[in-house]
Image (cartoon, rainbow, N blue to C red; front, side, top):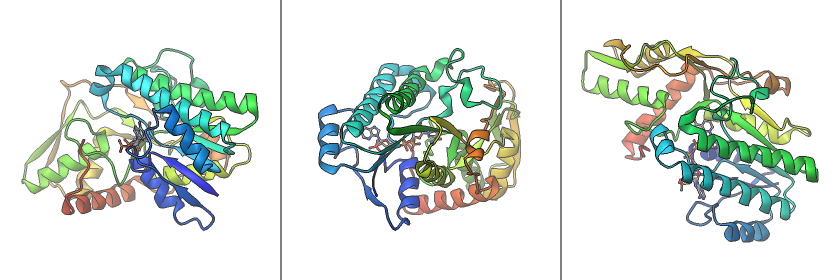
Length: 312
Ligand SMILES: NC(=O)c1ccc[n+]([C@@H]2O[C@H](COP(=O)([O-])OP(=O)(O)OC[C@H]3O[C@@H](n4cnc5c(N)ncnc54)[C@H](OP(=O)(O)O)[C@@H]3O)[C@@H](O)[C@H]2O)c1
């Protein structure tokens, strides 16, 4: 089977390459953004005509933090919609049998009941800070669903929770909470700081999935004869930010104090996905958080040693 992984140099795309390179009957088709700009419909169309993959895993996206999302909503909506529409349409026109579109749990309403079920989609308002990105991801998900309904092709989507693992972004301001904590505790240990203060009260609870588990779930979903139109991919377990900070500090070997700063806003008290649908298809996560943070810290150290830490 020839599979095109769109966005193969990203955190998710690299994990998919690691996972699929061990499959004997899979040949990977890979293009970086310089070779194939997915926002360019003519290039996408001729690429699919020439390569005619059997399957596509769509892990490409213009991603960014709250600041970037707020400042460039036009690009976050338009570029992400263009990429999804170009790829899904070209896949259908070139008889691609399977297409798996990756989104994220930001597609769900801001006030969705916890744990968030797939049925919460489009039931109320989205979070304003990343509305443009979420709308693009909802468009991709719906387009897959409509192609499946209208033309009978198996195009479907997966919505991962917060991911972590090798290839994460360690930018001091733009990174997600887990890589940010790894970097802060590592640097605090290196410079012998007595204490590290974390943002807010530390009480909000969040869910984390290792990116290698996500890649495994994607391969599992691609093999199902009748996959759900869209499905949450997570652990179904959450942890408070303060407990997470203690776990990261222990892994890194930081022995100073951990303090909170209740003057800073906490954000949503809890964000947890329901993984009942995914579990019923026969998949369950394997990498526990403590082990996953340990191997991620090792890859962080390796990247520093090779001067290849991603911080954009
Ligand atoms: N990371 C998470 O915590 C997380 C959680 C839930 C869901 N997801 C979802 O997983 C997917 C991948 O995320 P990620 O974390 O792997 O992001 P990432 O590391 O930023 O990777 C995104 C990839 O997309 C490529 N890309 C962007 N614009 C492109 C274009 N116009 N043409 C071709 N390629 C383009 C990028 O190429 P360049 O490297 O050249 O820019 C990069 O390789 C996204 O849909 C995201 O919403 C991620």
